[in-house]
Image (cartoon, helix red, strand yellow):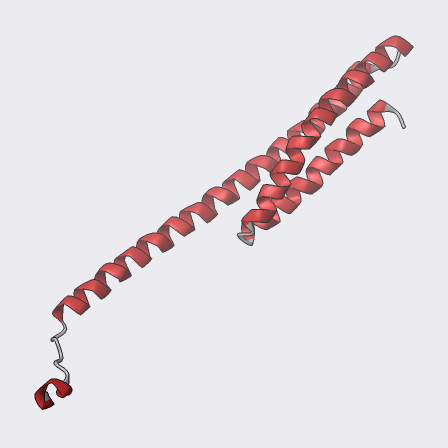
Length: 129
């Protein structure tokens, strides 16, 4: 397979992982989010390697590297958009979690106040001692 083909295939893998990551964020599957992020970190090295190999090969054989580079820029821009959407989704989920936490804190404080106003009930057994 050519380095260009490998490079674009790797970007497709990145897209797949980013889509999975977005789904995992929406379903609050944080271990899956972590797995997706690890997978994308591993792809970074391959992308760098394939980019250099493709550039060197096309330059040496008289290929049209600027044309490939334009396609890469479009692909990267699309992936950046996807990553930004995932970031926005994560921010929304985080905001919801913070709101739920605040509500739980309020409920907990109210329960403590209710307990402090409740009369102490003495056990009936103490009168038979």
